[in-house]
Length: 179
Ligand SMILES: [Zn+2]
Image 1 (tube, rainbow, N blue to C red):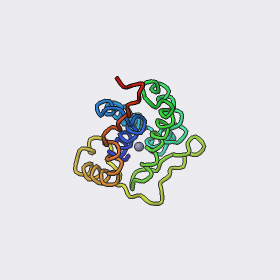
Image 2 (image 1 turned 60 degrees about the vertical axis):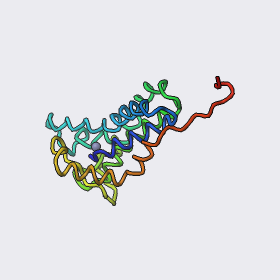
Image 3 (image 1 turned 120 degrees about the vertical axis):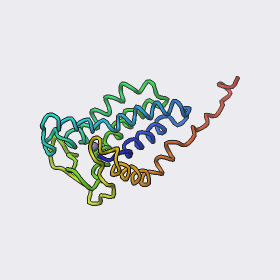
Image 4 (image 1 turned 90 degrees about the vertical axis):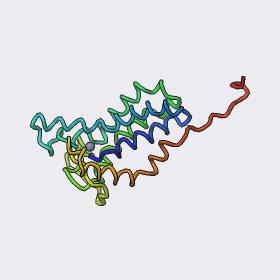
């Protein structure tokens, strides 16, 4: 996995779907979208069931594929869209956000590759260029190695952090909405 990178993509997506939302509301949306962005890593539970890393339903397998991203992201987006001010964007944004998870993992320099093309292929893939150090799995994420990965990802994705935390866009007062 990448680590804070997935959360940062959720934060940026929260601003994208509702740029005029007050910061507190954006924070709630960001928590939801960051959780969605991290969701593919729930597959680490496969280790508990003895499913090998490289198996189709092992870690970085089916849940990290583009097909899963479209199906799962669209389903969650469909449940959520009425709550957003730009509802048409919610389904595609949720699908793309889940897809960024596998793509980010393909930029990491360790672990197994990502089964991006599942169910058509179980080939495990990386990008040819892997600038992100792979995050440790489990409690080790809170140790020195986890901190190093966190710092590197914060540097890489600083522009997205700034975008996500930028103050809300002012909504112009139209004659109809003026008091
Ligand atoms: Zn992952």
